Image 1 (tube, rainbow, N blue to C red):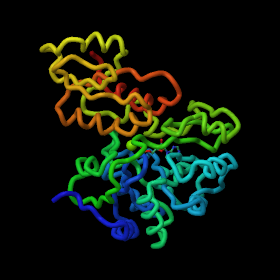
Image 2 (tube, rainbow, N blue to C red):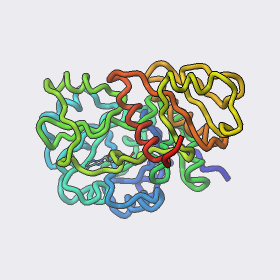
Image 3 (cartoon, rainbow, N blue to C red):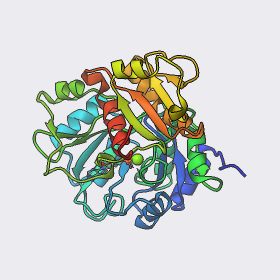
Amino acid sequence: MDAAACTVDEAADALARGELVAMPTETVYGLAARADDDAAVARIFAAKGRPSDHPLIVHVADIAAAERFAAELPATARRLMAAFWPGPLTLIVPRRPGIGGAAAAGLATVGLRMPSHPLALALLRAAAARGVAGVAAPSANRFGRVSPTRPEHVRAEFGPGLLVLDGGPCEVGIESVIVDCTREPPALLRPGQLARERIEAVLGEPLADRDAASPRASGTLEVHYAPRAALRLVASDELARRVQRPPGPAEQGVAVYSRVAPAEGWLHRRMPADADALAQELFAALRTFDEAGAHTIWLEQLPAGSAWEGVLDRVTRAAAAAPPGS
Ligand code: AMP
Ligand code: MG
């Protein structure tokens, strides 16, 4: 049997009972459980194989729900919520004691996000109507692997038995931007498709960078988001040189993800020349190469510029997971 597709009401009922549901969001698919029930959240950590000291983002239907998880909402957080919620922006704020402890991995802070995907909002509202304060939902993949951006990716990760609310392909395609609002100025913990400049324009000041004072979190680990194949970032001119003739015997099993066009015979996928388009298809492309049996992916180095910061972060981490070699 395939993982079961379900309706919003069925998914909300399951969440209210403390069960797991795969939820579409505009960023990636989430593995959701009610965040106000530590036993339900423990099922997420078990299913993902994720260490329980790595905090999860709590998804909320509105700002009032965010206030239930927050001890206070700093003025910077309120401004960013007003500007960018619902949307692909997670805010770290002080946690209200007594709620969301397991989701926050016991930290005194909590990560909050109101997603914009219509089915995610419908599910969060239906769950709230059943008494669910918010929903913890890390990416619906096994720990350390590529995040799922399509329902079939979730099925490939978790197989039959997991309820999947089918929202089609995710529009943004990489995980949310994370901004730590517990410090002044706020710090960018994880870049994404909401450009740093837009956040800074709303704050009226530059974001700080992640540093030793920043909370540790799996979404910010050096090695993360990795396909099975070893991913190598290759400079455009070097890649053009390597693929100007058909692959030799030593290059069997090498996949090429590039803007430059290779000679005949390469396992190739054309990389979008636009950062938003690349973000949207990146994780699906990496999965496609894995499915094709590639042992190595040569990924053409990305153009410079802040529009590419989110995808550059993801491919750099994926490359860091690969063993040394060419
Ligand atoms: P994911 O890996 O998709 O589950 O993304 C969740 C990420 O959100 C974590 O890995 C952290 O980077 C971040 N996060 C969630 N809650 C917190 C928190 N309380 N403090 C710091 N970072 C958090
Ligand atoms: Mg993840």
